[in-house]
Length: 178
Ligand code: SME
Image 1 (cartoon, rainbow, N blue to C red):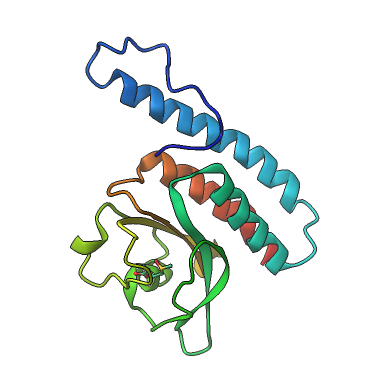
Image 2 (cartoon, helix red, strand yellow):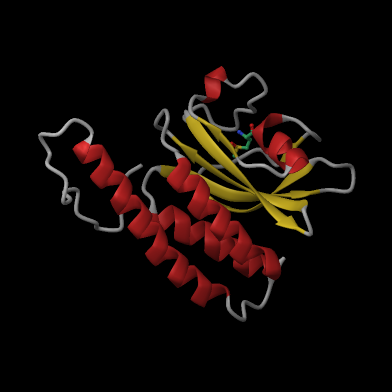
């Protein structure tokens, strides 16, 4: 996934080696995530409200990673459905029925889901037809989901294990603020 963080697209790898550039890109992305997490930790330290925390997190992610065309939180309602929380990007579904979609699955299981191609995910809920791939990470407290963080890309297969690792770290930073 590309970022707007200004990191070099070249790395120590020999570009003639198959996969070398890809490796460099992944290294860059991890570095950008690490820098972003430092900034986020500072932002959320003493953050006054859950809304301020979630809104700032979504804004920072969207501003850091150009490929995240939609980033935001879904929060549970009493009946188990998920309602849109603070987000950045085009208008999204206000309500996701309980247990449905990628978000519902992740909320229920408490496990991150990477969807390389949303059209191949049977229960995907399309809020915007431009979305081609997605990652949804649970925000957990005491082993139970209390929200989910959803990131969408217009590119197929935009998210990988680097995104999983770092977005789960983002969720752990946000959790105490909710
Ligand atoms: N695609 C999600 C719905 C939320 S939007 O992508 C913003 C899902 O299937 O749960």
